[in-house]
Picture 1 (cartoon, helix red, strand yellow):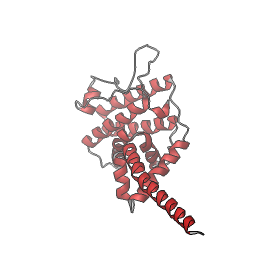
Picture 2 (cartoon, one colour; picture 1 turned 180 degrees about the vertical axis):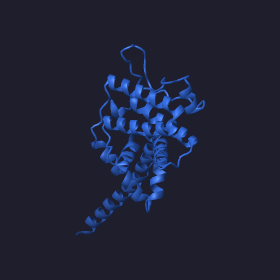
Picture 3 (cartoon, helix red, strand yellow; picture 1 turned 30 degrees about the vertical axis):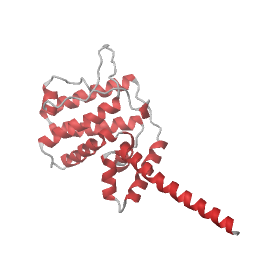
Picture 4 (cartoon, helix red, strand yellow; picture 1 turned 90 degrees about the vertical axis):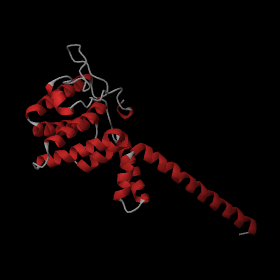
Length: 216
C-alpha cells in the first residue's frame, strides 16, 4: 500500500473511532431518559456500565417484538369495575386485596400483550415503556410476595395497592364508559368511599390521560 493509501486508511479509522466515541454518550443519555431510575439499578447490578446498557438495549429489542394491543371499551370498563372491588376489599382484608390487586394487574398486562409466565421477563419489558410507574410496580410486587409469606405489614399493603393503582391507571388509559353512560375509570373508582380513604390516606388517585403510545 502506498504512503497516501496508508494515510487515508488512518484518517478513516480515526474518524470512525471519533464517531463511535461521540455516539456512545448520546445513546447513554437516551437510555437514561427512557429507563429513568431503572437505568441506575441495572448499572448497579451488572459488572460494568457497558454490560448494563447491553441488557437495556436487549429489553428494547424484545419489547419491539411484542404485539401490544389496546383493550376494547368493554374490557376496560370490566377491569375498572374489578379494581373498584379490589379497593373495597382492602377495608376488611388488606392481605386479600393486595393479592387480588397483583393478580388483576398481571392479568391486565397479559391481555395487553406482555408476557406473564415469568415475573422477571414481565418486569423487564414493562420497564421499557412505563419507566414512570415501573419502580412503584416493582416495589408493589415485592410486597405482594412478602404478603404471600405473611411478612407484610398493613402499611406496606396499603402502599402496595397505591403503587399497583398507578400502573393500572396508566395501562387502562382514558376512563371507559359502561352501559350506564357514566364514565368508569380507575381515576374515579371508589373515590370518596371508605375504601378509597383507607387505601390512600389522602394520597390522590392518578387520573389517566390518553392511552400510552405503545398501546394505541
